[in-house]
Length: 189
Image 1: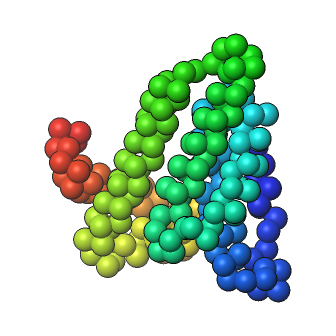
Image 2: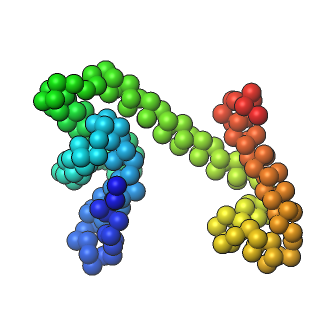
């Protein structure tokens, strides 16, 4: 599935207002998740394409109702769920089979729960990263963001690759333990 928004350039000349720019930016950031939600509920790509097309129209039409500063992704997810459920219901009547509304709700709850847990884990990980000494944060940043490979990074700083991997392993263990403690999951260590 290709994102039709991938070619959009958010240059001020191309977008007539900051409202449109905000909408397009937030929609582009949420697009794949919304499409996956629609696909999960309707069960095939053709129907999911119909869902996402209708969702984009509804989101734009109702964007005036969206309260700035709140969670666009959750708002868009709710719209996607409702549109997908309506399309699934319509197709179920026409085809004579499909998941019940109750089953669709349960599928959506599982998907939402997974997303919520992931967001919580990311937030806790950010907090744990902030607790690390500055030199460890810089090391992680250099390894993961600034260097094309760990071999090149090790060569650039004059260390062995094994030394880099050992330090990374220790930091990952510390971060994993911190996240587990923060989430109250001591048993997961």
